[in-house]
Image 1 (spheres, rainbow, N blue to C red):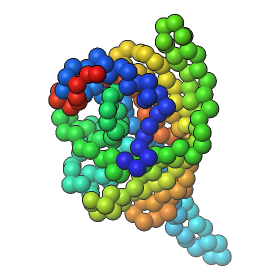
Image 2: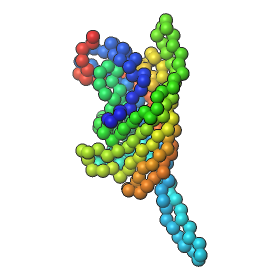
Image 3: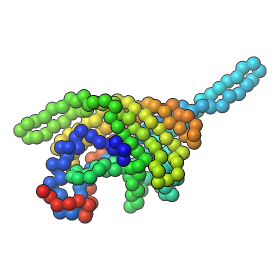
Length: 218
């Protein structure tokens, strides 16, 4: 992923990987939820001397994005499919996947994220126990884009806004790092311009171990 979804917390998470066995990969898995509304140009009607032009509201939510990606990748995802962000707690890059039952499809190439500002942080750190919690504030940009490996998507967006990342280290069952961003920007649906606003969030705290997915413990 170009400028992949990342968090300042992740450098600390690396130390937690010491609990994994040889050859196993420990991942933090969170849900990526997208709730956007696009304003599109509507139709015009004329009655007598008055022409009325309308706008249409277009939903741009997680299920719409899963459907758009499914169309170009040849996957018929069910209504139970989820977007997830998978972050290794040792070595490796963050990825985005669509999970539908036992089927998991890597869709990282369709998503990009970048920081448009430095981070402002509030935090409390216990130097004796090593525990820390707080929030990071920054301006971030989120993009739904085409992948060169597939035909163009019917849906795109580039939105930005203030993101708030709440974190707790350590936490059970794993590090907590959840993001909520109020965003706005532009996009298109079927080639028609959308003026977009809404929220993007990353929530959850599932730790999973993938056998044979990692390396030795230092």
